[in-house]
Image (cartoon, rainbow, N blue to C red; front, top):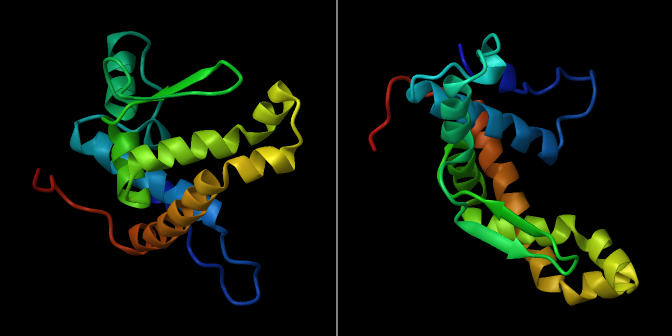
Length: 165
């Protein structure tokens, strides 16, 4: 059954710490993307053998990551441009978990590139972080929401059949 490998059960008492937010979010993202791919008639990569190279790979990649030009784009002070799709199973999982996929994209790209920005601009990291207080606050708020939503996803039974569109 797709998604089973993505379930992180709570540890038995005395066996260790509960999974952290990152592990919960990763597992819930896997469960949601596996279910989405399955609804589209694909075998999720984590749930089955590797697919043959070719058109099938492209179709799975488009179903997972989105197709066509990326709808989200953010230019970084380093000169790099980061892009993402708002369609595809991964985008749908992010929307479900974070509640604001475009907002999560912006906040996570900025937060994940604070050190490269500091290195590129020659500014201290503390100064760069202060400059991006709003994005850091958005990242923290959206990540907390995703951790809560991930717990719900992982403790709910996997969906059966095709949900209404």
